[in-house]
Structure formats: C-alpha cells, structure tokens
Amino acid sequence: MRILHTLRTLNFDIDNYLFPYPPRCRLYLLPRPISHFLGWRDPASPVRPTGNVTDWFWAFVGAFASIALVEAIVKASPQINSHDAPLIVGSFGAAAIIQFHTPSSPLAQPRPLVLGHLLSAASAIAITKLFALSQHFLALRWLVGALSCATASLIMGVTKTVHPPAGATALLAAVDPGVRQLGWWLMLHVAVGCAVMLGLACLLMNVQKRWPVWWVLEGVERGSGGDAEMGPPWEDGAEEPQRMVTVTVTEKGTKLPEWVTLDREERAVLDALSERLRKTSGVNSGRYERGEESEGSQFSKEVTTLDGSARKWWRV
Image (cartoon, rainbow, N blue to C red; front, side, top):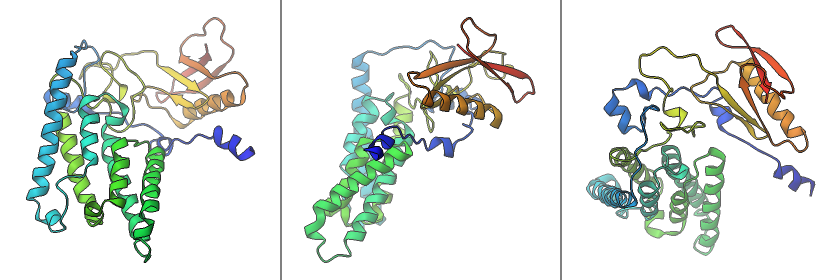
C-alpha cells in the first residue's frame, strides 16, 4: 500500500530535463507568409471562427490528400516495395482523422504526431525481433502484440508524445504479417507517412484555420493569437515593452510564458514554492506575480532578474 501511495503522488516531466530553460520561438522572425503556414499568428489579430461545414471540407481534403500521397510515394519507392510492403500502415487512417478533424487537439500537434509514431514503431520492432528468436514465436504473438502496444503507451506517456494511432502502429508491427515482415524498414514507411501528414497539415490547415498550435512544447498562454510558444506579444521589430509577467505555481510544477527566460536563481525560487505547495496540506495552487504587494499577500521573495534589477515575488 505504501508503494501505491508513493506512485499516486509521483510526477515526472521529461521537459524539465530536456528544456530546463524553454527556448523562445523565432517563427515570428520569418516572412509572414512562411510563419503563417507554420502556425504562427499575430496575437493582435482577431480570431476568425469557422463553421463546421468548413471544418468538414478541410478534413475531407486533408484525409484524402494525405492518404493518397503516402500510398503514391510508397508505390513509387523501390526500397519499400522490395520488401512487399503494404501501400500504407493502417494506423495512418486514424492519424488523418485526428490530424484534420481536430487540428487544435494536443494529440494532433507535430511532436506527438512524429515522435509518437516513430518511437512506437521502433519499440514494437525491437520487441518483435526479440521474441522472434524463440521457436514458439507464432504461439506467443498475442503476448508480443499486447507488450508492444503497452510499451508504446508507456514510452509516449514518458516522452509526452501521446498519439493514439501510434498505438495501432506498434500493434500492427507485432501482429500483422505484412507489416511485421518489413522489420526496420517499417521506420522508413512510418517516417514517410509522418512527413506527408506534417507537410499537408501545415499547408491545408492554415488556409482558413490554424495548425500547429505548438511544435515542441505545449504553450501555457492562450489568447487571441494563441500560445506563447508561437511568438512574443509584440510587433516585429518593435522594442519589447515593459509588462507584468504572471507565473502560475502549483503542486505539480511551474507554468510561465515560454518567451520569458529565467536564470537559475529565479527557477530555484519557483521550484521551492512548488515544493512548499506539495507539502502544505489543503493548498493546491498559488499564483505569483511580479509587481507591487497586493492586499492579503502572505510572503515575498526577492530575486535578481537577468537585467540585474531586483524583483519581488508576492503570494496573492
């Protein structure tokens, strides 16, 4: 029971290790037509909602174009065809539906789309080849399929690349004879599918909609222009204005606009506050802002920012 209690409260975020200082997105520096089709939007521009008929139209066009193009590339590729590969891995049908019907879903963003499929395929191939060393492989296919899918689920969860169709990719790599015989060539097949999905989604979903919402790190600030990862909230070439930055500290960690850079001392302060919330009974979250002390504030912590000025963090 103690182990279960420990696991219940255990949290791990791989991005804290991969991106201890989240990089600032530079898409806004590209020419406007290019940045537009890469998903960046000017936060000052109004959002133009689309009707569901428009959504259905672009979902139809996207699904048709992506599946047809993947099949055409595979059919024309002698390297893949030499292994009697199927025209397309069935899981890309589900990927197309998620990609073009729900472009704003966290499951449809580039990181889970690409890495989810590739990591799932790689783990399933490795597991299948390991079991294939046994003379009882055919009798153990049920176990291979279940283990491949479960392992893919675990890997996607740890790497924050959860993409449901990728689970089907792992399962097919283990139990479908036509897909299994590809071996490591399946990685090329999957990479082609991901590249086509990625390119067509950028092209089609940005005509009247927006995709992606984020590329690598899920944004923490949503407004009229979208997530903070897509760019800073000021015009190109203009001097960065002085503004209050709001940081949310919870027992699970810290969230702040990704265009804000913190030094080690500032991050240590936020981590200490988050740890305090975890240890304090009945306190789930606290919000901290740079600025003057507000009524009801309980404590403050002075830190030195990157420009050398002293700032205070107040509990509000």
